[in-house]
Image 1 (cartoon, chains in turn yellow, blue):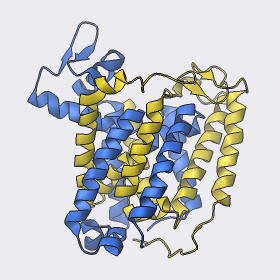
Image 2 (cartoon, helix red, strand yellow; image 1 turned 180 degrees about the vertical axis):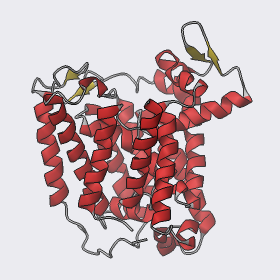
Image 3 (cartoon, rainbow over the protein chains, first blue to last red; image 1 turned 90 degrees about the vertical axis):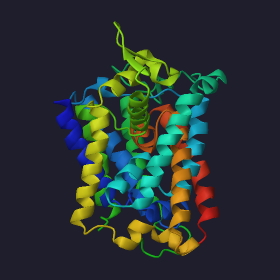
Length: 194
Length: 182
């Protein structure tokens, strides 16, 4: 059953990534260089919609809180984020969109995947020395959510009810998605449509 | 063709919600490690092995968390790995339905052409180096744009916010410096 869900949700994810332009490095780079923020608006809206649905569902008892999977906070999350951001801006791909882009026929995406496999292998090899730096040690409680989500196995950074906070933040993400300008640098050439 | 941001954002949000509702949050970058492990285990069968308690690996990273990754390497038909294969099928289907990217785009994207001309080898080198940095960073961070940023921030997880802060702090200046045109 899980495999069937992997096929359905995975296919839907790939389909939507392509439809919002996320498989196109031009769209990604135009977003990251703040020329055209349509994709940024879509991402913010998606986080907001996902958050609202999940936490409303939890409160209504329709969504299993046990399905949440919160990752540990550590200094390496920020450092790794910096590296990923630099490579993302350089190539116009992140791991998911790079793989999806290769499937749409983009040759450069194959080189991205090849580099990615080597980068992941380099991490596997250097993992013990990275760990020895202490950069992977949990900070601020490690696996924490901003508020305290009722029934979740994760602690909250704040004592606020985490599900209500999740809905409030979700609404803020939606509002920001609408507020963000399409082209902050004012030189918006419409994103090249395929 | 590309859909407008409102429709696209709602659709993407629904996919992330469905994943959490039915199984677990979406993540992709771990599967680069799993594929590496599968390839490396073919070359060196001693890398990953099944033990009485579960799975273990001679590589410390594959062995961590009680051999969680080692188990996936030995059982590639698991949810997360099949998810990525299905994602490729979905993207392929979407691209076919909109008539594909076109030969020029498939050779190199417009933004590269605008900045560096018709230099496909340069583009492939950039994509390769970018891929290396992205996946090294994603594994150091413990997740990527889907796992940390989208799934993480949607769940109000602190690590998702830390990751997004790092990613955009680097991505915006790098994109502005390298791609002056387009």
